[in-house]
Image (cartoon, rainbow, N blue to C red):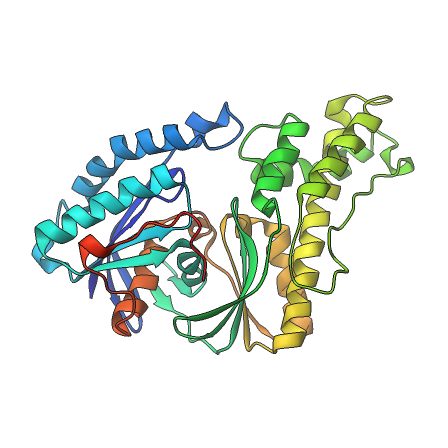
Length: 356
């Protein structure tokens, strides 16, 4: 099944043309145009600018994607219809609807979060960047989705059947990383910068006596009786900690210690909540996905705990952690195969707050 997939939920314009089967995906084109440099000076994504860039980028990418293929070969068009930024979502969905009408092709609206989940199911093949196999899945699957806009635990009972177990009540983990990086004046996006700064801790502690200071941040809601998350208080605590440390230290000297403690606070919270959910719902598999899933320490910590609890652990290839259209195509394949979510182009609804 040849699927043209389009993803414009935030600040990446992504188009993928791939052949899907029960065994996996063979990519013809997988294209992403990033807007990080444009939004970096604002410390976050500006919806109106994101929309403008999508308009500029989507047709050139589509032209490249279809360069060596005939639209008549396409079986399905897949599009992210939420959640995300409304101005950004509208660009992708309007293009997808137009192509569906023009080419007379079925349209499959896909939940962006479902796409992230399916990114973990794609197993890259050695020495072949354009070939992925679908991992053999054991249900139920507990999914920890961690990105700039979402942090949640979702139980996948079977194909296309989802149950939310816990969500973030305020800031998502990725958003918290961005805000902490801003406090430390590291730049944007915050996740990779916090991780890099954290790795410098041992180097700096040879020169400084930071171990004598109380570098401690809260683990928000880690002992709550539910599976929800909250990271806004962690951001505030980080601000107060930095202000306190700056009375006796230069910013550049405290960055590694604060970054390391901040990262540890988020990782410990995510892992503990995930294992609590696993003990309660007894999944056969735990899957990590989303932009923050690229964090090396989070991957290692979750893998260690799942191994200890004898649960299968899967995660996306690092380059598939961020927003991409291949994951949307993968989700669409299973939706189409099971005849779920097929919609006429004129019945497609965009929902920026879409959830399971």
